[in-house]
Each structure stands twice: as structure tokens, then as C-alpha cells.
Image 1: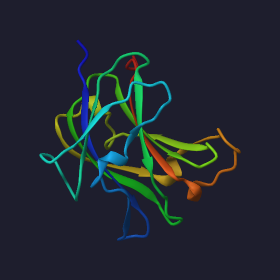
Image 2: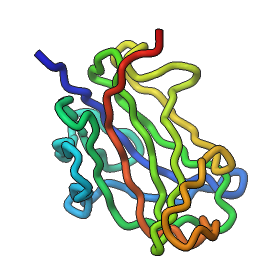
Image 3: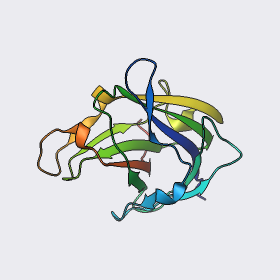
Length: 168
């Protein structure tokens, strides 16, 4: 039986030292939609039991073909952003569970980064709170639109839940 990956996230962009701009505050999770790309979209719900720094969204991804699923919402990236910082409450995740954050420009070009918590993957950690910090400079560029890098034009965030076979 497949075990679901259950996590809770709060996304915040870190700009200048000491300042932060919410990429999404999760006060209204109805703005998060299944990204219609053929994946197996995770289930979402507002989480009132596990919250930190405002609203929270619980994501439950149950692995089945095609072994990934995406949720998307509108966002903006400040020009002085240095990192995407967010809190994850890990409930459970089976070996091979992975999470990625994608930032999309209106033309389709994208920026992606795998979420690691410290030097660990989700499945390697016990249940509890973890802070993720994804440096803007570490996002990989995916030329899918006009192939011109313009992260300041990003207008959509995508959180991706996936399962992959563990490295041996």
C-alpha cells in the first residue's frame, strides 16, 4: 500500500537582510489549483492544527502513475529576493518522496529547485518542523518559453510532489 507524503508548507521570500516578503501566506488556500499537466495532484486542505507564522496548507500526495503531481498559485518575486524560505511540518513521507519548487515566468520559462531540509530528504527525517531555505541563485533555469532569463517576471509558483526510486 502506498504511503502518502503529508507535509505542511508556508512560503516566504527573503529579500534584504531582516526583511521578508510573502510569496504566499496560505490564508486562502482556494487560490491553489491542480496544475493541469497530467500529474496526480496532491490533496490540499487548510491546516489549523499545525501552523507557524500565519496560515498553513496541508498537502497529501499519494504516489501513483505518473509518480508526480503539482499545485500552482499566482505569486511575484521581488527584484531583491535572495532566498525562498519556508517551514515544512513533515507528517510522513516514504523512501523516494521528493518535493520541488518551480517559479514560472508568463512566457513559460521556469526556475526549479529540489527542496532539501538541511542536508536531508523528506523521507530521512522524523515527523516535526523543518525550515527550508532555497537560495535564489541555486534555482535551475528551464528554458521553456522565450528562453530569456527573467526571474523578476515570475508570476506563478508551483509546488511539486513526486516519488522517485532512491539512489543506490
